[in-house]
Length: 285
Image (tube, rainbow, N blue to C red):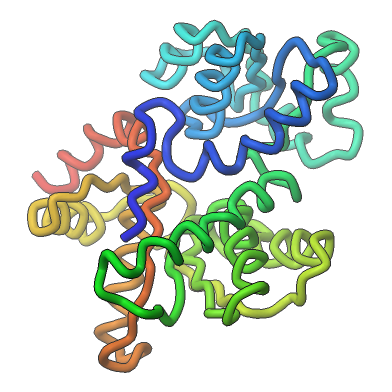
């Protein structure tokens, strides 16, 4: 398990890697702040606001829904992020080509970061994880490994690993989808690989959403707590627990041969678990 959750309590998991090139571009361009979009429990906005504060930049968050307090929103405010609530219709417009135009006019010297830290810059920030793992294999007593397994939200981190593996053995990257296939992750990964000049291959997407993005059920809640107790590794129900559960089901179903060595990427996002605690308790009651 690649424990990206241990890197930093605020710049959690894969978010730092997805932001690193965006931050460099913002600073190179003399931007005074960062602007992005997400939900009221967004790991991305949480990391972006923390990174902006540390680098002396302003930050603006465009949030889904109507104004209300969550633990994440309180953190965003503590980090100094200016919040604008889009409602639900306004949030659905985020995929329009001109979505950021109005906000760039309002914050003219702010650098716009795609939702989730996506785009080619986000993927390229994740590609070095392949080399990082290569340097740590000896500590495990491994000479090699057979593939990767991780949760896929936007598909950016998965695309980064495929790009990194293109210069290695092209080990397969397995992405456990946190949302339904209709959310377009497959198309986004293909686009990112095309933009990177990398072949659109070397990965597989697995539907692990269990009925929808953010949907929880009793088997998932029980699996999360039992796995934490056995492994001593904290999980959250939107990404990491679903990915781990899908991996277990795949192993039990004989999808992998005995002896297969996989790198499971813990993508962090533990701050978002705070919003699910009450529901987890209710499911197990």
